[in-house]
Image (cartoon, rainbow, N blue to C red; front, side, top):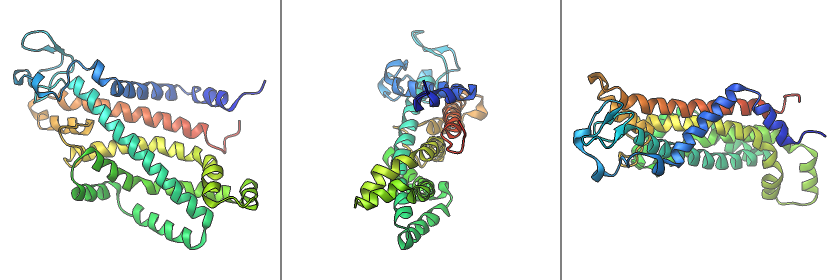
Length: 292
């Protein structure tokens, strides 16, 4: 009995121990983000539960009444670092997933339209894409946030603005291959509308490379958001991400309180490494040039 596409995908994906490691790290990051309100020892952003006497305690220390152990220590505001990481991971992943999803949708539509219609439409859309790609992502994001201000929604808008062009370029390349295939000619002969041909017929066949790029770009989005928050122009202190947590502890590093920045940085590295390893394996498995 021949293998189904899903069985083949599963066999090839789990053939690499690096892919398995990446999936474990990614599931760990997603798990702590989703379960943060239930598994965190404290709500680090409920000011009423914080005691300034517990500030900057080293890992493994207990609070004043010995009722709580801070396994990863506390920061300068007496917040449990482990709890802050769980909540910060949630913010970082939400920003990354939402921004990449919207950017993928916008970029895919632009790239498909450019490839399908060609001519002046293709030239105009691709010149816009080229113009956007000519600016460094971090610079464009900084300019947008300087105008929009701080906030999770503002960061998402900025990340969408710097990411959609990558998907547009990839979607156009894939759509150019699909445009001249027989099923597209058949759809035209049936007088199907352009939106239906693009969305119902061409888009599904262009999705494998876009999924790979989206997975890898998710890691880039999380890293970029963390960089912006570290620079103080990303999410506000009331809605911290991993970048904000690293920034909060940066001023204490020289005084020996390394754990305030180290553990959020480690959590950020785990999430990014996990996503990249999964993305690399997806690229190999979904590569249409591979012979199975």
